[in-house]
Length: 210
Image: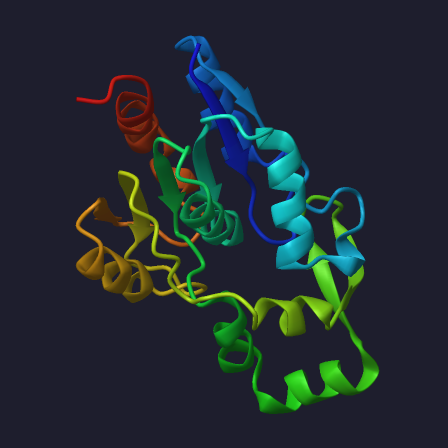
């Protein structure tokens, strides 16, 4: 049985609509799909390092294929680059350049205040409330490369109207990595309106590789 790990996005969780839809579709096709809580119940102290530790524990060193959405896509790329036993990777609007994009998106003043106080309120969609987030996420994120150089076959979907992570990030990655195939879809960052299109293509890529 093919084993797959799905990694949710930032300020989200295992019960996100996208995670539930794709996990159910793949399970119906005979795969075993696990969706770990990357925050491990502590979103306030989230870092890339802590999330990679959760992934290490969930993967158990096995040759699991990966699906990652947004920040989860970036984490999937980071993990695959460090674990050649991962056979295949699917990235959904992956947040390449994660740490570098925060100052660009928030503005220098907001980031300076975040560093000064150590905390910033973030709306957590999984919990439907604001949660304080430690600046450790930003500081820890600077340790990691913008574009993890993994060699496994990869399928990337990105929305042309994505205003959170521009599709140009995925295009830049795909241009430098012949192992990656990019499809730019007429959608936004969430890609929830193209799930019916993506699901069979993801299943074919992960479960019936040529």
